[in-house]
Image (cartoon, rainbow, N blue to C red; front, side, top):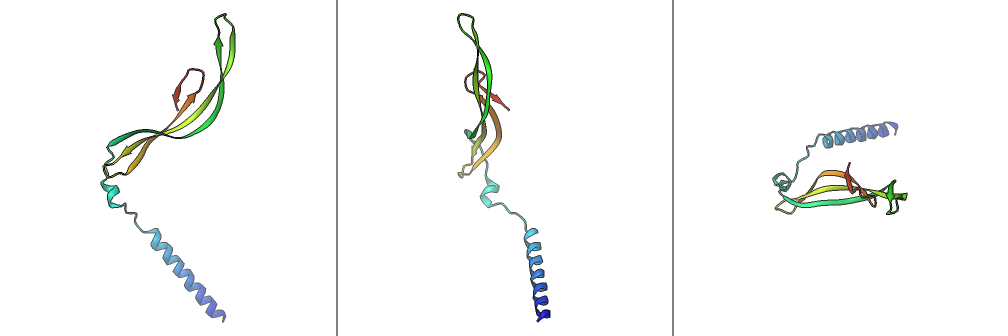
Length: 111
């Protein structure tokens, strides 16, 4: 009985090792349409995620010459370019992040 269990366990280990070696050496082949795609139609820039980056202070002077400090909220915006192929596939490239200032007048700052 012990020899049978040992033999079965050795057989299972061999099968496991053979399966892992076969799958690890398999080549990745792209689909036919992916290899022929030519992404030449620019569809625009996609802002796909936003998150709060906090705020910073800025000075404001009124007509009487009084200066006050106000708070400007800053939002980080993740962007990417969208390119389309003639077959309909879409590719996202050139990922970037900008910091969008809400009130201080600084505008969008590329990170």
